Length: 449
Image (cartoon, rainbow, N blue to C red; front, side):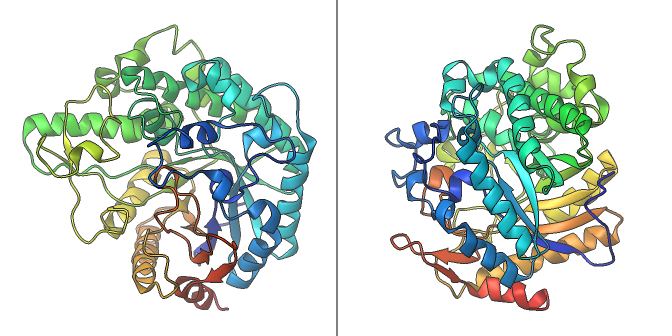
């Protein structure tokens, strides 16, 4: 299990990026449109009205980014592949120039002594597939598995560790229920269809990847500790629904091959035999060799309070169809994006997820949005606290193989556009020049550089 993620006495480190957030070059070398190209150009969808065209241009400056990884001294580079660069229509014709680009990225990283780990889907679904129903349709899961094999056949000789999906919760529930991520739909309980098809796509791809000899297939989940603000029975029931949709809808299929009763109570759509067909969940059960955990902040359901400042614009609002209305409360201190800083949440999540799954874990994303200045002492404090939490989880018995910082570069931060800065390297918005921040130098020193 997880043969290429060695567990040693010391925690290993990495840095992560995602294709749409850093590549730019959205209309070159045959790349097709993605749902994020379409969504971001919808008036009001993105905070500053910008899109991936203004990204850091890693498509042309990937060698500079590989140099940054080498000089940082990390073990791993977690990157994602843009489906529209490889299969512009989502299925059918393959674009060789897209594969050539990722050849160059992988080779550049390896030449600098860093191990690349690939993510096959980080939300940039080809727009033609969305036009045909997107993740609400079963066919998209099969198209995903076909695309996964195209990528693996080209890069699998050098990339040994693969994740199928990144944060399917965001893709399903922020994209198809809350409407704040691409494709921007507010389809209510139909979002559960997207969740199932995402997991089916993972299972289909994992089966084929394993058959092709890949020994390290995982999935990356943004699980979260759910901490209700009181013991009121109605709130506890709602919090269980939040936990079901945030966490158990993914872990149940992966571990048990089933959706539990509490989940089906708030998501009766998942009882539909036309949606969840015989063999679907059995295909997903045991399909992951490792699990990636993305963690930023806990979830604190509180009593529904329509007058709570910011409640109607909170990104969690609308993302739990079938759950009784709750407020999502945030305590201080907070990062610039408004997320609570609580390292204990990561420690708890790692210990409990390992106990639940028995799988090797990687912290595949953890980081903080603070100002774009290079003297980012607040980010250093955040990272120090969460690395320490990861180490405590290891001491408590969690099999955690690596801690990967989000993110290498300031980038396009989805619905926030270019207004939030998670990078340990600043990127000039005009020249795209890179400047390592104090947090980059802190991590480099910690790693012996």
